[in-house]
Structures are given as structure tokens and as C-alpha cells.
Image (cartoon, rainbow, N blue to C red; front, side, top):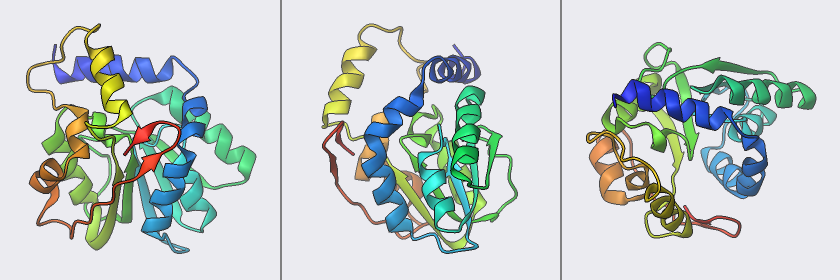
Length: 203
């Protein structure tokens, strides 16, 4: 199964349920990520694999010029409705984290909360995050760790699913320092923070 087929199945899966209900349970992580990134008014802010807009909404409420992108159109439709209901101006667009539809150095801040980690080609996704972030800009990622409760859940679910393509990256490796250094060291000054969400486990 090629990556494109895998991503199509992933997109369909995310579109098939009200993800915004899950997002409510990780609101504490959205809050923490945006607080650490400190998006100032007028900041060009990109939320990659934005889902239903939890991070995008918080950045826009601080005055940032926010673009949210995701490969699941249904999630974006929900995000647009949520933004309209809150009076927030957010541009939501369909896009692939492995091939973002933006010019080089377009954004001051790039973020992804439990999103880009699911892109099967980790190297391509990391290169895209780096490419669209301006030199000296900030990148903020929240990823589940292999050792937390979500890691246990992922392994349980995987035992009932067909195996992914052999070259597809394991999403949980984005939650390890070694892997993130391999992908991003040299492009950003890396800082790691271990947090525990009372709802869903370690991140």
C-alpha cells in the first residue's frame, strides 16, 4: 500500500467521526503549546494538521494571522464553523503535511499538535515544517510518547489492523528526543518539555 493510499484512508478515518469531541479532552495541551509559542498580534502562524482548529483558534484569539491546513476536508469544515461561531478570522485550507502548499519562509510560527506525527514520511514532513518557517522563526510540536498511555493504546489498536507500508514511520517516534533531533537539529534550537495530560496520558 503506497503512502498516498494510506493517507487517503487516514483522511477518511478522521472525517468519519466528530473529532472536535476528542479535541475537547486535549484543550490543556492546545493551551500549553500556544502559550509557549507566544504568537503576537500580526504574527504569520501556520497550524499543520490542524484538525478542528483547537490550536488555530487560540493563536487567532491572540491576534495572529492564522492559516490552518489539514488533509481531511471534513475536519476543516468543522473548523470553519467553529471559527465563524467564535468571530475568529482563520484561513483553513486542504493540504498535505509532506507537501505544504506554501512558499518558503512564509510563516513566523509553525505548529502542530498531535498532527504531523501521523504523516508517514517523517523526513518529508520535517523538511516541509522547516521550509515554510522563516529563518529565526519558531516551531512548536506536541507529540504522544511511546511510553505513555496513548502509546499503549496505539499498540493495542495496531494489533487489530493490517500493517502499514514498510517505509512508513511510527508516529510515536516523534515523541522521542532522538528522532526529533535526527529530523530537526540544525534547523531549530531544540527544547524538549515532558507534560502529562490528565485526560489522555503523556505527551
